[in-house]
Structures are given as C-alpha cells and as structure tokens.
Amino acid sequence: MKTGMYLRIAIITALTAATVTVAPAAVSAADGAAPAASAAGKTPAPAWRTSLAGTLSNNSALFDIVSVGPDAAWAVGAQYVDGVSQGVILRWNGRAWQQQTTPAVPETGVWHAVDAVSARDVWAYGWDQQGETLGHYDGKRWTETPLPAEQGYGFAKLAAVPGKTWLVSDTAINSYSHGVWQSTPLPTGVRISAIEARTAHDAWAVGQFGYVGQPSRSVLLHWDGRSWTETAPAGSNLTLSAVYQESARSVWVTALTPYSEDEPQQSKVLHWNGRTWRDVTGPVDGLWATAITGDGKGTVWVSGDPYGYEGTALYWRLRGGKWTSVEGDAVPGGHTQAYDIEALAPTGRTGQFWSVGTYGLITGESTSAQYELIQRSTR
Image (cartoon, rainbow, N blue to C red; front, side):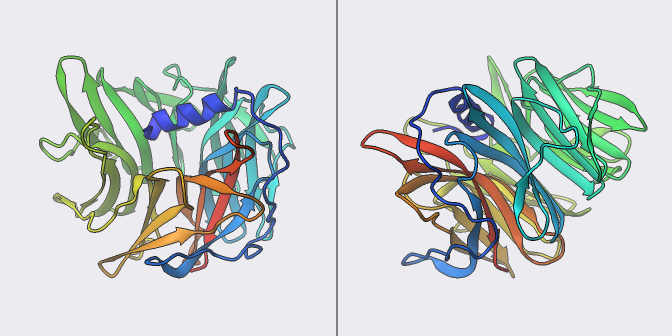
C-alpha cells in the first residue's frame, strides 16, 4: 500500500512506463454529462459527478486543484506522450475544462502543486529531470519565477495568500514576498506532506518526523507571522497527510496510523480548536485519507485512496457533527476501477466542491490504462 508522497511517486513513475494504447474511456466536458452512481448502504446525495475524465493520454494523472470561484479553477498533473512525461495545467472557465498551453506556459515534466489568491494570481510548481519550475499566472500569461536555493526535489508543497507564497522543500520552508525568498530550515528527518495558509500571518504545515534509531512522530507547524511553532499532539506517531484551515481557531488534518504488516493503516481526522487537538474520525473508513477541505462554514470533506482496487471514489462529509459517506460518479465507457482522489477544493462560495485524481480502465485480461479524473459535488 502506498500513501502520500509514495503514492505520488508510484503514479509519476507510471508516467514513464509503457502501457497498452487504448481510446479514452470517457469525455465529459461539462458537469452533469454522466449520472451519479450509488450503491446499497451509501448516501446518494449530494452526488459527485464527473466533470472531466479520459481526455488526456492513456497514462495521465492529476495531483492538485484550486478554485477561486465558480468560473475559475486550475488542476495540475502530467500525461505521457510519445515516450515523454508532459506537465499539464487545466483551466475551468465556468463551462468546460481546457488545457492551457499559451501564452507562455513553462514546460516541465510534471506539474505537482497549484494554489491561487485570485484569478489574476495563480501559482504552480513542477519538475522534471532538468530541474524544478515555479510558474505564475497574472490573468493574461504564465511566467517562470526564480526558485529558492533550498529546492523541493520534485515534491515541494505550495500555498499562496495575498503578498506571500510558500514552497516547502525536503529541507526548508521557503516563503516568497516582494521578489525575495526567505528560508526556515527543517530539522533532519522532518518531511512535510501539506501546507495551507489563511493569511500571510497564519499558516499550517503538517507531516511526520522519521529518523533511524528515533521514534517517529507527527509534525504540525504553525506560522504566526514571525516564526514556525510545533503544536503536534504529544506522543502521536500518526503520518499527517493533509490540512484544511477553516479559521484562526479551527484547523483540520487527515492522518494515517503507522504501517504494520499485521494491521492495515487506518484513517484519522483531527481537529484543532485553538487550544487542543481532538480525534474526530468517527465512522470515517474505507479509504486511506489524503485530502481534506471545507466551505469555511462547518462543512468538511475528506477523500483519498479507497481500500482495494474495485469501486468508485469514496468521499466522507462532516456536517452538523455527523459524518456521511458518499460514493463518487462512475466514469462510463468501460470497466473502470482503482479510483483515487489526490486533492479537494471548494468552488468559491457556491457550496460545491472539486476533486482531482485518477481512475483505471481495464484494457485486457491483465492490462489497464490510467486516466485523469475531475469530479464536482452537486451541493
């Protein structure tokens, strides 16, 4: 089983491997083109409907998504074309998803992360064998921005707020403001899985500490505008995978229990109330949780990699203190399986949400192809 960075390594590695050539499983340019799927024991509404699937190459994946309103969203990932991995930036214009190529989108093998302050302030991070790339979109064109000295080795995490952008590498938390990079070194053994910022003075980074000969532990770092302070629960050895900041005194994280050959990893959801962390997992099960977001009004969504290979994407919604499981839409056009959600994002203030990831299409007795997936909740 692979989670977090290891899952992404596996997906990206697959983009450099040969696969069976098949036609795309489905093309859904706009929401509502495919009916939502449901199963016994699952809540059918609010449904998650496929907005885009199978339009890229037969070895493609999406890793991150950001939305600044119902008519503006960006999803990033990669596709494998003619033996070469190509970074992909998709843009939602309120009607359909379109791949961005001009003007001047920087070239890279994989776009790994994206965040935005507005439709005129969008950031994307990518990499390939030639190095790393940080792109910025000003509403008219993309330009390449110089990187910090402490780079991310292909798996940096990105967060952007007005006047400040963070890029977390394997060795430092880098921040960019007014054309200047500043770096806060990370202790040896600390690996950050996700970062989210609410303002230039309020940000969270989560991950895990692991070093030979020392016990592993959770890492939760808070930025107060002056320094990063660790606020991890004492004694916790969870692997923190994603973070969502609802307010200054309400922060949510997803986590996984330690790996064991005898016991499968379990998902956890933790909540910070401004003073303490509390386990609020409840009935959340059936997937390795690696994505979390919310609407800022008390509703929280969690998703990730469902247990096993069969079935569609699985989402959990927390509203009014109650968790509800919701199945994602099944992509039509063939035998599909292995749905995996990499990231979630609200669609502005509409009460709807985006998700991105991948799904597998069975192409033969022992072969399959992997495609990009974008879904949106109906409410």
